[in-house]
Length: 489
Image (cartoon, rainbow, N blue to C red; front, side, top):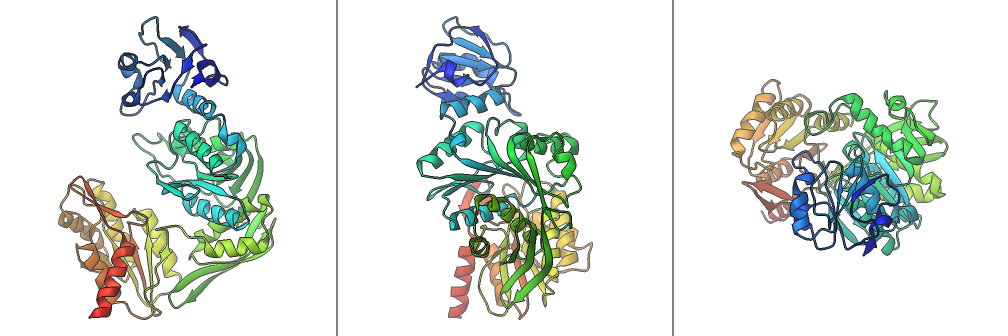
């Protein structure tokens, strides 16, 4: 139980009616979860407006309403008004949990690509150096030994503060979190004292209904992080870095390939062995270090360079950094699965044309004998995505294996036909095998020395969604089953 005036101590508000010296049993922003004596925060969402449920909340026993628009309520119910209840919820949530983020070193990573991999690399380095570190990201929240699957890249502010509190209870000293532009725009991260804010890169993504109205708005939302952190670490090679950091209030450091970067990568070269693809380089400037990582491509250099830029502030030894970067793994992001000494097999989350083009382009740099791409597309989603992904794979892969991926309420064959429309714009060879396990069996059994085979689209997902139901399906399990079955033939 908390006093209402303490929950609002960092907010500007107006007391419309009732009293501020009031005991509050819970902080609630979902009308379905209202309990007797709670403070109900009326949030204006894209689908529904919490103000419409104010009367219902009162009937269920809410002691106080927190609003940004006028509502009718009995005189016995306290009504508090503020300019933006999303911002209000963030600061009230921090107060409810007694400001746990102030007792942690919180690192926020924003950008279109690279957030997830960077966050896992940072966690790996800090833990190697003896810092117990929590993680909040696109795939999951990691608190001690517990992994909680994620619904949003950046959870709602109340959930964030709850996670911070749990991290403290588990003995965490640091938290690395992915910060989405949506999370910043919706004030989910308001009131968090970020020790560091990181900018990886930006591309015109997430523009459209229920997301960002324009690329300029997208840039502006990313920039909010740099008015809320002590140190900003930014990619100097990105053309928009100055726009993103405009009006910053933090100390800035830069990283990248450019000679003027405070921390830069030099002498980058690809590393290729049977069943292994990686990249090596020399870090120069703020840190002088020889680096090799088990993840291919230039973007892996950026991700690891970002992690080094962050972790040098924690006085991590060079040896710890090197060991941790070798060991860092992200489930479903260029995840190598050892199946043969002759060819390379990997799983990756690439599920749109932009990410697939980036992935296949990176792998072609390693000059495989054949580049084999296995993928499908989700049902009840844009058909344009299917045409585009088909065209990309047809153009870049030597063989495309078209299969099924979350058909939802569509027929898998209809989706496959759309993908073929895209492939047929190219000279690319393809086979179609709707059953994903059979498709994987085909890929492995037909693998040739020097091949690189990528299973794209599922990544960390461990289910297949068919007609409204999620069925267990983990590609790692399917690969193991296929290997065991092939060994018995």
